[in-house]
Length: 205
Image (cartoon, rainbow, N blue to C red; front, top):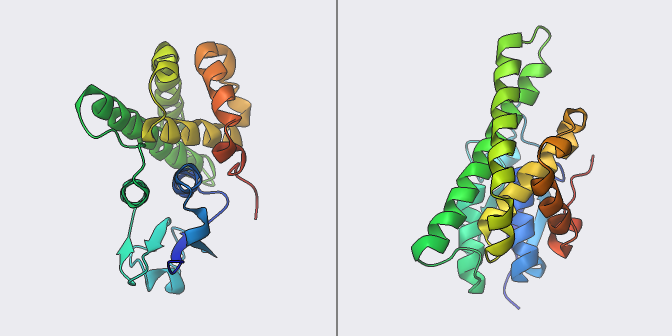
């Protein structure tokens, strides 16, 4: 059996979840050693920085000791390692999958900034309003694309959007997004039932 790769990991990070979903889908979970790593913006983690000077997760240490980061690169590496189909090789399916991945990552970036802002002692209300506006506009567009998501072969785009919606539920449960995006919500429920998503629900710890 090949030597294990080391993944700096957290049960709450949506970017780590992307990698974990891909690992489940690709049958690579047995080859990963999960290392619980805290990556706080104001407290760089020396142990994590030994592998990634940016002190960010996910970080993957390969069998030869070389490192890869961030989730976009790690997911594509795992797909290549397993000979998977999460990244279509060419044509319109590839661009659609990459577009959905970029959309999901962009939504996650906005949600994390929104969460950080709302936890400040005196949050900027116009900034909070801007994040909510962008999030609701994103959900509206994705609701229009729900049938396309159903019809397209499962890809990194589905993985990333699913992780973004899961983070929305985890950190913004009071937003109540489902009534305003019913088609997207229905698609997301089928995605949540997939074993790779059921096994990677974010938890405290």
